[in-house]
Image (cartoon, rainbow, N blue to C red; front, top):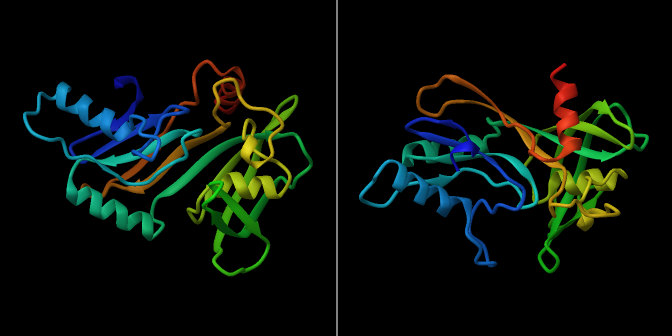
Amino acid sequence: MESQIIYEDNHLLIINKKVGQLVQGDKTGDASLLDVLKNFIKKRDQKPGNVFLGLVHRIDRPTSGLVIYAKTSKALSRLTQMVKNREIKKTYWAIVPKEMIPQQQRLVHYLKKNEKNNKAIVFPSAAQGAKEAILSYTIIQVLDHYQLLEINLETGRHHQIRAQLSKIGVPIKGDLKYGAPRSNPDGGISLHARKLEFIHPVTKTPMTVIAPVPEKDTLWGKCEENAER
């Protein structure tokens, strides 16, 4: 668990989530990162009572990258408000097929969640029960068969990046649910919550946190290596 901690102080704990890890308990009953982290902190810090840890935001189970947990109720309430006010800038990386799409683009769609199949339905214009979804992407690398997009989210809708990219013909690598032709070996999708930028809720200092890409994935490794040149 220690190796997944990207940043920690008295108020925050920021984790680099692995593909397949669940950020919070769900109907599967599988162990969640929230519970694992509480147990980890309890043992590490030798805390006699219950450990307070609150989830600030979520990322999908097959996705990797940054997740913020709050270690105090004060930090949790402030961070939750910051998420609502869109004061936390989230940057994602996504590996998609090498199809012809604009170098940069701002996508505006309307998404509606289908509860039966846990999938987002995409509408080109306003529709009943659908919420506006906005993101901007830039192609930052072109590989042999894929390209790497850097994505900035303006809204935070269910499966937003996955659904919007699929709609323009570039489903994320490994994302069978949204049209990828085959799965990834680890069962995840090539979507990584790469960077978070925000003002610390207590100290008020500017924060920029970056998560390394998944290990043992040669394509991700190539992307990161090229980005650092």
